[in-house]
Structures are given as structure tokens and as C-alpha cells.
Length: 167
Image (cartoon, rainbow, N blue to C red; front, side, top):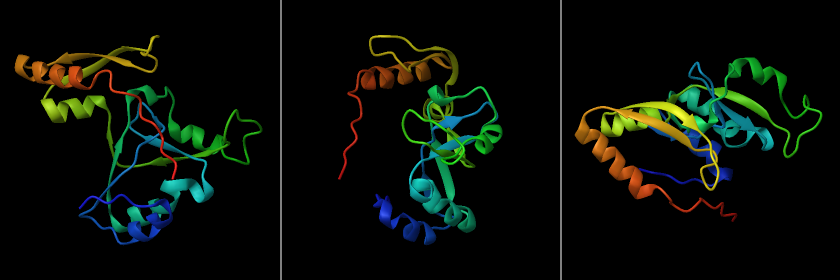
């Protein structure tokens, strides 16, 4: 069963979850060592702050989908002790902390391998005219798998930007 839960109910729902459940939460950063970091700007640590204790206590599988554009070239463990609302003097937006979380980190590399059986090597990134934040990949694998991969990529390329709906 797929649940879409209001943030006010997250802790209550997470408390009832167990090893047969899956919690999916995106990340703000990943490091070269496989760690994922989530920025904490909301009261009590926001979404992850409300649920992490329940998830780890109850053995819930956590899946962390995150794009390689969020890869940082340092260990996240080394940065979490240097930031936080009361540690940072100035921020251009919201002062925040960070929590490093464990789980199945799924980047484009793992997703394309799992979905199509192709190896993905990131070889570049960035650009202008809509390519800001993009990644460039080299696909390696059987010809039919690469064709299937490219078919999907062409289908979703140019999708409209996601818009935040505030309720």
C-alpha cells in the first residue's frame, strides 16, 4: 500500500512501520563514500527529524533517491558538526543543520542499472538554456538495453519543471 501522509501525521505513521515497509526520502547531498545528507531547516528537523528514530528502531527499509547533481566532493560526516541554525552566522535563506542518513542510495547510476541493465558513467554536467544542473552520462551495455534506455530518456526529456503546491 502506498501512503501519502500529511506532515503532521508522519511520526504517528512511522511509529507503526516495520521491516516489511519502505520509506522513501530524497536527499540534499551525497558524498563519494555513499553517505546521504538531508538538510534540517524545519522545526524538530522537518520530515526526517520526525521519523528517523522510528525508522531505525523498527528496521524500516529506507530508499534515498538522489541525483548526482547533489554529489559533494567531501565527506558529509565532516561537515555536519560545522553547520546548524545556531552555528552559522549568516545564510542567504534558511539556516539549517544536516543529518547523515543510511539507506539504499539510488542515483541515476543504480536506477539505470536496475531498470535497463546498463552501466552508467557520469562524464560531465551543467550548461545553459535549460541544461543547468544537468548530468551527461555514458551508457555501456547490450545494444537492446541501450536502445530501451534511450527510448525512455527521449520520452521524458523536456518534461515541465516540477512546481511546489502549497496547501
